[in-house]
Length: 99
Image (cartoon, helix red, strand yellow):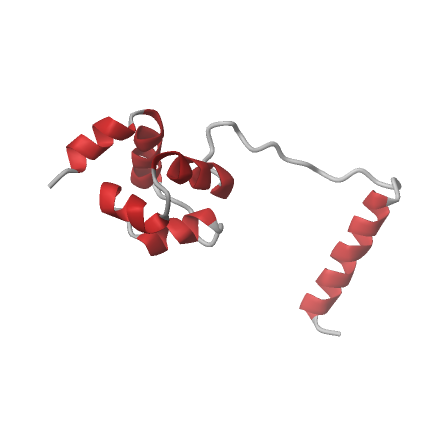
């Protein structure tokens, strides 16, 4: 068995032992200020009916938003700031980005 296969078997055995209550595993809490894919989707839905409409208003490509919403990509610090501004002050963001 390859090393990757052995690691997967070990991980599944650990998961099964946890589910049976035999061991405790380390857990993590996601800080409230982290933009999860669900939070990003909720921001977009609050201000636009689609990723295309969001793109038209805020100049963030529909594909980029889809990647964030599906968890395939994470926004960098500048994008996180912009998304937070859009969440709290969408009309101000629209005015600032208007051509």
